[in-house]
Image (cartoon, rainbow over all chains, first blue to last red; front, side):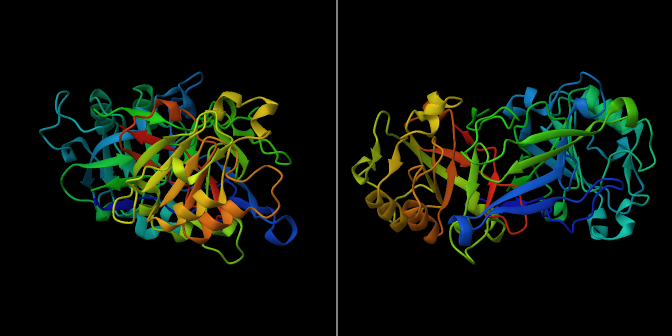
Length: 210
Length: 210
């Protein structure tokens, strides 16, 4: 039996959210006492916690998550350690990567998940440079993932890294966790979103199979 | 590259829901025109569309989905054809099944998904008998799945099939689709729920890898 590593945060009313977003709400709509079964209503903003996003997050008329084949969200992956770096630059990518030899996903481990639940999480976190973003976009990747709230700085108004990646049909997974538990060698990765009509993003339970 | 088969319905405001439930709502909270990016608020009842449920759906203080290790939701599976049958009985299970030789999941293909989107979907659909439920509960299964709205009849007040399965730590996946596309031999199955705190159920994007 292979090991499965959960790379996702809990969805909880007390969880940290992007400044300006609402926390999720979980409301009991049927109870065992009254109805014989429990049911809840869950309300979340689409970029809550561990989530995945596609072109239409930033680009008008861009591709939505439900327009992708499910294959887009499953595949091989590698993790790249960027611990204690402010900028994730092109020279961190393995030299051996090229259009012929490339995993489906690259995950960036910055170690920033240690600040999850603190104000620091949203402050001056590591980001991708335009250079590495352009290089990633030129590769046959399905997507990239990171253990921070965004691939662009918190005060970005133009979201250039998002635009470069999403315009090239990559998906982006943000707020991953447990990336330190992944091996140095290639593994299998799943970031299959809910199949929400016309969705620019979805909370996701991302995991790795080792 | 293995084939991936999506076994889940779209989450959409116009989707069919269990009588008495609300349809999902999808509301734009940030727009590219005003904010530079699009974000939505998604509100769903937990048993909407293709979904997974655990003990606490029916049993007070029962185990919630987030209390399971993620391994519970990934594994080997077989599909059993029950096309055109009203009752899913024990004699439909392969004779070779036993405590030593058992997949992680058994999916029941009733063909009822052809009524999805019509009134008929909620009316007199095929259900599991108590006999097959007890037999399934005695096996080392992680869960069972079906392409109908419930494993109990729509007018059930006591949910005996749910109770037998959930009490034995099986998870139940309802409203699956595309089960006719699955092979007769064993395949890999994923029904990983959102990691919602204290959740008795979650919408899920279930899929098979062939």
